[in-house]
Length: 198
Length: 198
Image (cartoon, rainbow over all chains, first blue to last red; front, side, top):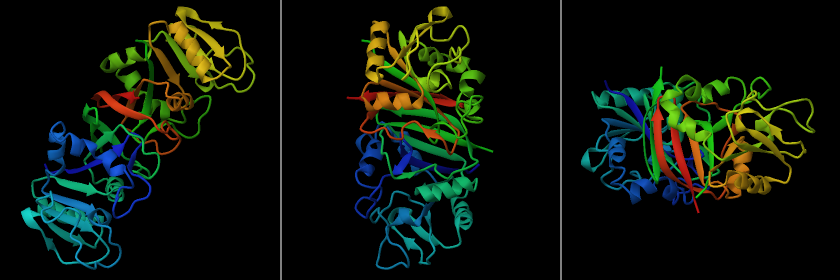
């Protein structure tokens, strides 16, 4: 059966973003390099986990993950990922502001959902069919779906670094119980696959 | 060569103790059961890690881990562990108040060190000889030794539970970099073995 998954990189002290977030450093100064070194420096050693991140029939993301623009849509911001984003599937962007569907190369489309997280999940589920649905981030969107009991599998990629300040993934998540399904590590990251217990 | 190790159980959201700590619930209400279920409910599945916790030639602990008494030593508090504590080796207790050495059954002794963490480590090193030295806790003592650059190996036993409030292990630890050595998990716990990078 199709399940709802979520992948996110987190520091040993629980942070998914540091202080001083900006357009140049969406995760905060120096934090992207810390949290995603395993992706960029050792992709072969982490191939299975990297492939799993984009192995879904539909994706959901918060507006802040799609881009730094706030308020009404202006200009031509089409995401961080260039002409051919790595999703190759429908992506549903949660926003308060309407915007027509954006078709990208390689099968990715961005659909802007203004009716809330439940509607976003319904539409993603319809688009995904028998395939999984991935909550792509950011942290606030993941927390909302965790608290709504909508996530089946949380895959934390724990990086052995201390960030010390910023945004923690699990602050404000309540009443969710997990079970460890599997763990795999190399020196840059520990992949923890957790199942939400119902 | 002899190394300085440290084992501690931590929740998925980074807590080593919850709110409302008391004599009956030294880690806070209900937290002992959450953080140590893997020890008590499935010791066989976690045998290697449990054995490693007490496999040291000397131990160091903070006064709060030794007992709930504050100020001058009064009465006959001899630790939480009964007549035969599980250490079977010299244990150095960091305190501001002098007290004679306490000899227990099975080779455990408690020596009360009033000259600070460096002196505690020196004395433990001398007692341990070629064997490892284990920083047994609590969190504040571990943080002090981490910040002093004295720990070689941090073994986190990550329990897939959210505690949501209380004391976090790594809050206030700065400038320490880790490397993941190994990871092993079952459904109650993920054992993360981290080496401090010099």
